[in-house]
Amino acid sequence: MKHFPLFLLAIYSASMIFIGLGDNLLQVDEGNDTFISTNILKFGLPTHSDGVNHTMLWASSHDGLFVYRPWIPYYIQAFSLSLFGQTTFAARLPFALCGVLSVIF
Image 1 (cartoon, one colour):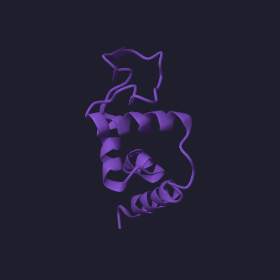
Image 2 (cartoon, rainbow, N blue to C red; image 1 turned 120 degrees about the vertical axis):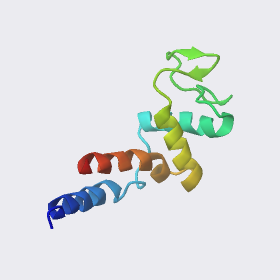
Image 3 (cartoon, rainbow, N blue to C red; image 1 turned 90 degrees about the horizontal axis):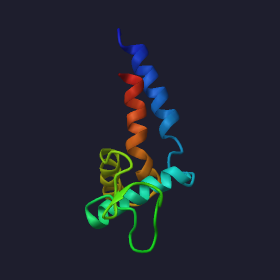
Image 4 (cartoon, one colour; image 1 turned 60 degrees about the horizontal axis):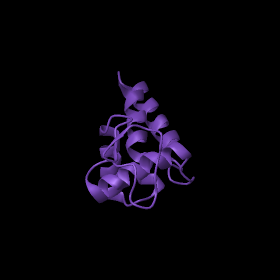
């Protein structure tokens, strides 16, 4: 009973975050992040280009590797995309889970 308000807050925040999570198209920055994550699935490393498309041409790169930001979020998103397919829901799911966890903890 002591943690009941936290439980209600977690349920409310989860419902607000997860309802309609995959309904809208990805925004520009989400699309760039998802593109880098799909390159991880293709090549094993986050790269700027897949041979056809490119992201952030002004960002630092070493032999085509994306070194503009840390790689861990991209690998987490790539794991989600590999589990649930390449959908907007799968692209946003890891970050939505982090949002719910930030409310709880």
